[in-house]
Length: 180
Image 1 (cartoon, rainbow, N blue to C red):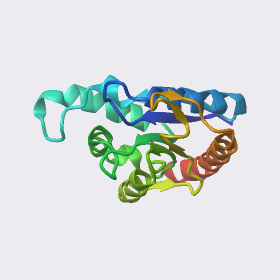
Image 2: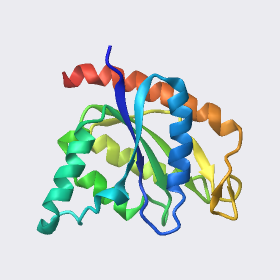
Image 3: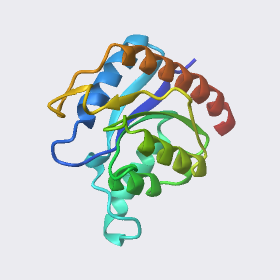
Image 4: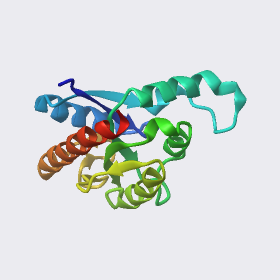
């Protein structure tokens, strides 16, 4: 059986962001599992225009093609103003049917573990027909980051990430048959 393709989507483009550190950590854990092909997908690399801007048609097409190639996702989202980042919302809106019938896990971070952003993201994913899994690693900017910038996760997060990945693989496998 062909391995699933799971994208670890970095949902921030802000200078000084910590999402690359978190994403790389998730990928290291995921790669040790050997149950899927995992890749980092950084929204900052796509330079997506705001929805409706006709000057960015190629970037939107490239983004949609990438999302279409993936069987499931792990979203790494910061919490900005009690929600997801604007760039992540724009990226979600820049594709539509490419999201349908896939699964996703959420890893959030912020002063409250990014839990409010994760809850907002769950509602958006439901509209895009993405099944989000229950296990949700929530990283606290005060305790899991040194000086708010250097990622040093607590040991308990490793088992949470593994459980989330297990659920993403299970749901992604099931939903792949729906898309076939």
